[in-house]
Image 1 (tube, rainbow, N blue to C red):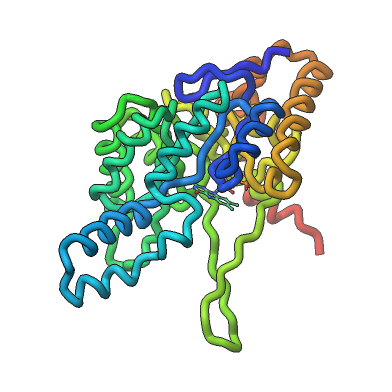
Image 2: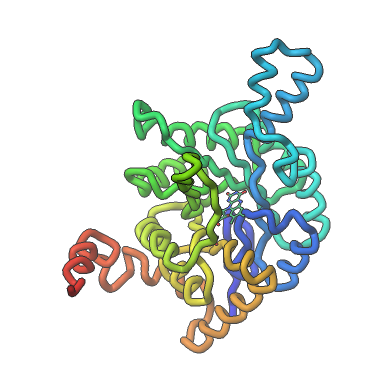
Length: 330
Ligand SMILES: Cc1cc2nc3c(=O)[nH]c(=O)nc-3n(C[C@H](O)[C@H](O)[C@H](O)COP(=O)(O)O)c2cc1C
């Protein structure tokens, strides 16, 4: 079965890759993922805070900062809280590149237009084949309009694009008021791909201790539906490739994402649950399913259920909302 696909201009042997997570901090896991058939390796993010923290720490060390500045340093997370600091992150890219033959995609994660963006070039120099940009921003200021939130990402993309030649994809939040329009703006600035979507981790509240608590729950397949809807809506409107990330756990999930227009899927929760070799079962299962259903290639099925091609496009629109609510029987 021909599972080959192209993503961010990179020819891939199939459309399934691990998403950004610490799984690939260990070279053992990287090799296991490649052996199991992963199409590419995606590193976890290098965060703006890590870079800024290191730059500030360096400055603090050499410049003997004033008390107020020393206090500012203390607000940043400690470097040892992260598994890979900026230098080790760059080393890890080189090490992974030397260990595998599949493309390596790095990830930069930040929200301001600052010096941390220079790391895009260092990531490219370290050998990454492409870069994911994750502007994980929570708009907590009620006076900040949506246009300013969008501009933040557009400006960061522009700055990154100016400093690298490798393809740059943007991992999107689902919380834009017009995600399609925003994706088209990123597309016109030269984003090579959009990743649908960031998964936002919501804090809970401890009602006894009166504090916010943090827990990371892994996803399940129900989270895929939000991604399916937007992949289906965007398919055919962008030059950029669509990657689906969030809620892909089974072969059926992969098929749905591709039918809605995804070039590739990224999987994390299922790999954290079942281990890197799980990706092999997904790829074999995809191939088998295509064969059983008389497809010749994965390309043949892409977009067949997108808004443009779907026999009943209203399932992705408001009409479906009405239908679903009215079908509920008490
Ligand atoms: C432990 C963990 C670490 C993650 N780290 C990153 C990261 O560094 N950068 C990023 O863009 N996404 C990160 N993600 C999000 C995943 O890449 C992915 O988008 C999300 O988990 C949804 O996919 P899933 O449903 O297959 O888990 C992380 C997810 C998990 C569970």
